[in-house]
Image (cartoon, rainbow, N blue to C red; front, side, top):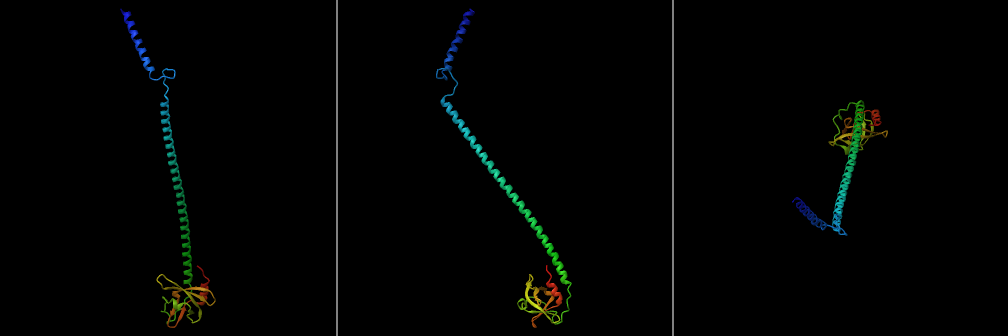
Amino acid sequence: MKLPLLAAASGLALSAFLIAAPAQAQGRVDANGMPTTDSTPAEKAETAAINNQVSTANAAADAQAAAANAQSAAANAQYQNQLQQNQAAQQSYQAAKADYENEIANYDAVRERYARERAAYRRGVWPDRYARYVIVRDVDNLVGQRIQLITGARVGTVVDADLAANGNVAALLVRLDNRKLVWVDAGDIRYSRADGVVMTNLDRNDLYHMADQRL
């Protein structure tokens, strides 16, 4: 009884295989009618299109990244260049500032020496009549006037005036009779408008020496 049952079971399995095989073969066959796993032309075209899309997208992404990198590099180069220019300008400014401060210090030192030398000159005693006639704003009347010593001797001619910030006369430029020019401080000059007399209490030789001084 077992043999007929086994034979029947084997026959059933073989029948099932023979039925399934044609079904699989009907899925995809080659030109010879044999089953195959090769892609169809349509599938190959679709795959190629997808690959082209991916390649195009990758190329676009790479180009965009390269452009962004180039833009960033250009911006960084511009920043570095501007930074170097700013540093150079700052260094130039500091150097110019140091030079200016040195010049001011030297100029102030020379002016102090000049003032000390001027202060060391002998001043005569003003005649009572002229002691109070200090110069204030009589520039137009002063230019062209002859200037005299307290002895009455003429020593030069007023050719210009230097005004202080408040408009008062700070000094007179005098062309001495020896053709030299000298600035005489307003404190060393008296002016009598009534007499038309411009007077200095400095000595003639001191005026000549002052004309040779330079700041």
